[in-house]
Length: 354
Image (cartoon, rainbow, N blue to C red; front, side):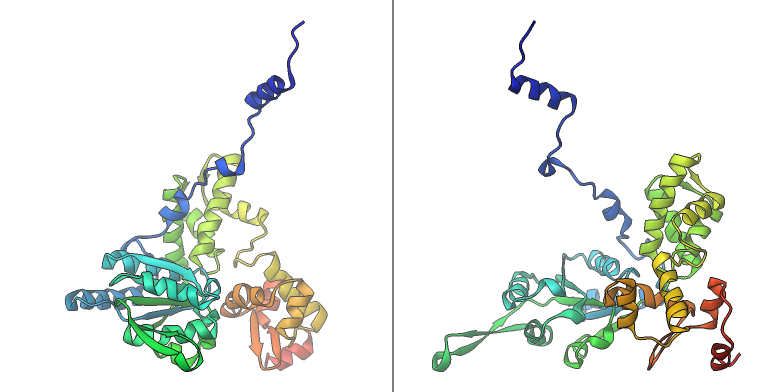
């Protein structure tokens, strides 16, 4: 009988059931990279903004100068980062992407500004969250393309103005109102991104399905678009989830029946409301008589962060007319009651003028 040493036994077991170490895992970013359009022709939606940007970009090229600084604002998932990438691609320049919370110390923003090359684009996401020091460093950088630096201490302190290459700052925010006036006024162009129409989202779904190499019918694409809350990021995510169901439970084709049944299983209703959205509306109705109630109270009752309620749930509920924001708090609208199939109390009905 052969005697197998412990080491030899381990090697045989590892050969049969190989251990995959975290550092050896290769992450596939192909889908995330390929899903982002590279030019205005493949960028779906935001038609008015695209036409304006095309003219602005063409004028900048003819002048031979960098673009004016741009600020994009609107709910998350509408393509602010994507359109910044398209602008960089159209201008033929590099883009540096960062976010305001990552720029905690002065040296963080100074390091990025000093490393920029002429014509490059600096994209700062959630720019309304910049701290005061970083914001003040940006003022002369945006206006005069200089960096004010202090050397020495007390009586020997001197201020140096270091020239910077001319660059374009693109800021993105979900809360334009939280930007300080001095920062907002330094942007040459300010644009709001709008929610997408069902027709635009249908094209987004079809494009994403093509990239995923999944067949989708017109009815299937429309069914997914209907439940995507007017947001392409959500549409892309739902295409991936529905394609999983289509491959495993059906014949691999996403038609209207497959899309609707899959999204029903995922508990996403015909207006795109998920479990959290419905829980929010039901909470206000059941516990607070339909409102008004403060957002902090709602967040605490749902065990959610206030930012999640304000940035993720509320924008679409307000846009769809299911929720109303009043000086005293949030109220469920008559449309919200109807969508949930709940009869409005007579007192609430009279308050809404019905």
